[in-house]
Length: 116
Image 1 (cartoon, rainbow, N blue to C red):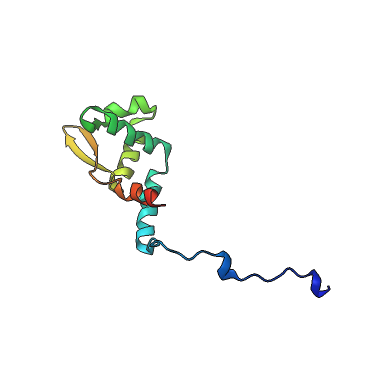
Image 2 (tube, helix red, strand yellow):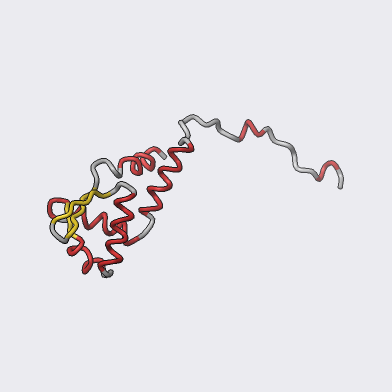
């Protein structure tokens, strides 16, 4: 191979822009990834949407099963995942559980995507 066949070397500093914004920290990335994992299911996203759109922003499990087209145990599982991730609050009234979107719970996710 002749010396003229080699590709010319480039100054890597010339093509790579420096990082000018703050990069997400490892603990924040782990926390955000965990939250996004809870949201990364079509049924869970629909549940959040349905609860937010429900009268007074609160819905009973019994109000969610039929429109979602899933069984009550499956809906309850998804609601439990969203609650554990901090997206929903739960209030028990008699035998039914009522859910609301936790205030500020979506702020971290939306602010991350708003800053990208």
